[in-house]
Image (cartoon, rainbow, N blue to C red):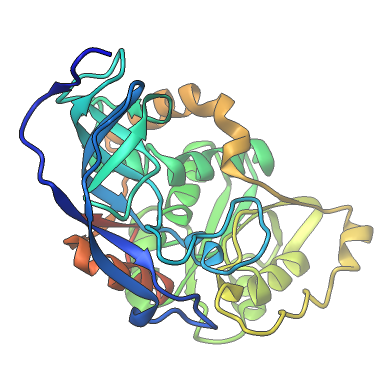
Length: 342
């Protein structure tokens, strides 16, 4: 094989974040370990990427448990992984050159050895590179596909979004407005986040700590809702089932209220309403909607450039702070997308 092309010198060791132990209930700092590891040389068809930004996401909590799921659990004593944007520094792959900026799935480390087929070149002229981990990345496509394809939102619908100040929820609400929803309602976890949702164009927003969600939702949507985008589960899902009008639809994206529970959560107590109302509740994985990506990027990047769609980022500095950023995400300390700059 030809000598790999290089852009710059590469250190012999770099830092990674490993899963040191499996959490029981809420994760804690001791469940993580920041370690130094040798920086590998790429083989044919691989590139070495210096990560610039990495993502922390709620779904990662489930992968810390040793249970069978739609994605394998993280391994103990090995680096975690997740979305990252970085710069190719050594290439042994056709079509990728040193200096290319790429999106890939090996975050939680300063340098990543990436198969060329798993790296997607990104265009910094289209949007800031951080956007490819948020509004133009997995969270953005999740919002777009869940609202439009899974829930089938139509102009004139009333839409309710839980965890609406997060990376996905804040985009769902704005997309609903841009697509002609009659009314958009969001729940969030603080007065400041509620005010922020109103600034984003939500017609109504409430703090779920103030009183039972069912009461707040009834006040915000006295005539009911047509679409519910669920990021929370639990009392939010139960309230939405009560509020959904006949033939209402719910896209079940996540259930963050249950991710750290040590005991199984009780199902919503009003599931019988699904029958008489002929409701549709559908879970989904963003990976099943890759066919929408080109349409999604074209449409959403246009709204970002025009200022019609806003996105927020909470950025934490340094790989040593990555575990704290993840724990902060679970506690709701972020506004919009939570990122770590490496």
